[in-house]
Image (cartoon, rainbow, N blue to C red):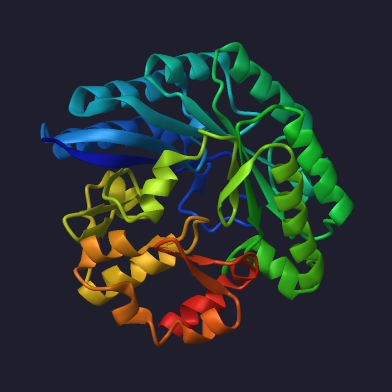
Length: 370
């Protein structure tokens, strides 16, 4: 019996760095693309294992669609040569509008990619410019149309809320524009101002003003209600899908299933060890080894709860016991009393889950558990 795993592949190249981004991505390093692909293929061959079957693939970045089609084709060929993919495996690739080409989509289709995720972010071009995005909304429409013409039918759009200068009317317009493109999945992320980003600098200097907490909460509720009316089911704090189109790769991560990571900064989780490849591109190209951390039983239990509470289904008490050999309530019963009493968490049909109010203040619940 083969071990079924997820597989994450990181492509760290970007045309320019977005104002909010603290991901390990690099602008102006296109000349390193070929060397990077060579190193990535080498790592793929090193990790090849006939006892592994790939259930899901996720190619993220960075901007994977910035790669020339021929280089992406080489990556996908190497993955297929090195690993067995399960029939019906979900294979996703992130794409940025303005960088997608017909040749790139053909390379993805040839390599078995069957799900695309577009970083659309906002309908308003003024907000896209503020974020440092390189595309317009018109290019979002063009990219989606191009993908559909190549028979990609499982499409996600990333949207952002809580942006500087963004209004509730802006969010409503963005949702309607996104829905008019007939996606099967929408990810609606609240802005997090990360340390060391241009966003942090501009906000701290007062040049950009964020919406107040109540307005951002109204935007989130608008997403929930508008998408529910259109048949989308919320299955995680920020993710909504038509029936049958939830992202299986992400769900497996939230359920703490094992996965491999390939590429600079890629993380993996295997045999109770978490590893991270060098985030610095030069270190990765030089073959510097990954950093490994053995997950303690205490950390493993907390991960199960922290990740599981992100999902609408919550944490399965039975699955928790199977994974850790101890009852969830024996470990966290006392620490969860306040959240239960305050209506942030409920226990229902063998699952522990956040309430709608609890999703707004998830960190408060997690602090209690710590």
